Structures are given as structure tokens and as C-alpha cells.
Length: 99
Image 1 (cartoon, rainbow, N blue to C red):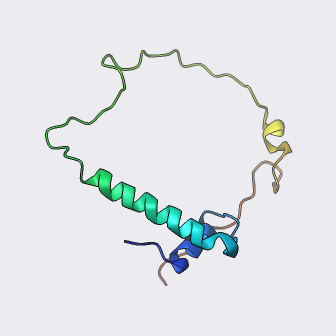
Image 2: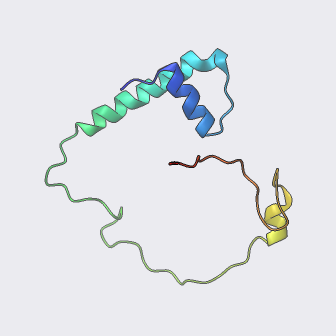
């Protein structure tokens, strides 16, 4: 699969990225190089290899679960570009499907 200009425009729209038509060719090359690298990794022999859950053999030591109030509700909303009385307001991304 290769990314074309139409797919790139759709991805930038869904990811809410700024679209710069002057950089489109460079972005296409970068995305296609990334996909090619993923195809190379997909061909790595993994038969008989157990999935890696932890980087160390013993796993991660359990930690104490405790609540730490580092940011207040008002502080979290203070720099929001758009907010309601209690919530962040974000642009609608998903469309309703079906009839």
C-alpha cells in the first residue's frame, strides 16, 4: 500500500494537523518510507517467539495505588482553547453511521 495525496489529506484532517500543500511531497515520502519499514519488520521471523510483556524477566514490581491531586479541575481547564463550565470542548470527529 502506498499513501497518495488524497489519503494524506484525509489523515491530516482526521488527526487535526495543519495542512501545508507545499510540504505534501515530503510528507508523502516520509509516510511511504515508514510503511515500507513496517513491511520489512512484518517479515521478521517470529515463529516460536513468546510475546514480550515486560522488558525485565521479573516483571514490574507492584506499586502502591494512591490518589495524588496534582492538578485541580480549574487548573486543567484554565488553558483550554474551548471549554464548557466543567468540560473541554473538542471538535466533532466521528460521523453517525447507518440510516
